[in-house]
Length: 157
Image 1: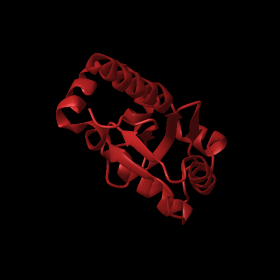
Image 2 (image 1 turned 45 degrees about the horizontal axis):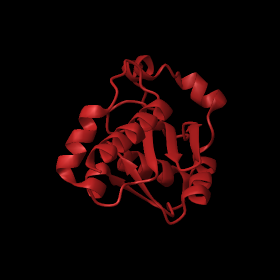
Image 3 (image 1 turned 120 degrees about the vertical axis):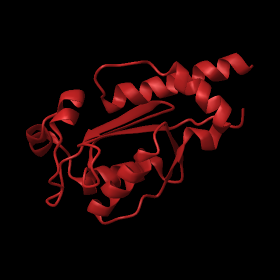
């Protein structure tokens, strides 16, 4: 295996339609974790009740409890400047772009798929080890990804 990722990211979204947007982000990294509900930007209007059921997050919750995109983006830039974050879903790169477009700034870090770190074969093994969950929340999903990567790394040595 090549160098293993140390920073893992996951987004949850308002749906799977082209005008969907990120509603939650979580990152786990050595020594900590970051998570935020994302307040919808004024032009983010799409809402999927299927996604709401899956994530157990309402649009009203995001409006009332979410953090504005600019604050989430700035905090992530502060925390992850120069780092490369690992994702198990190519859509996470899209959600990152949507978030930063709404914030009006550029990310100072990269997000790459797990395959970019470990190759397709090892990534396939990692995907098999991801815990199956009924509900999806970003922090639990990203913790599962880190555990699956670490589990696979342990079997290689």
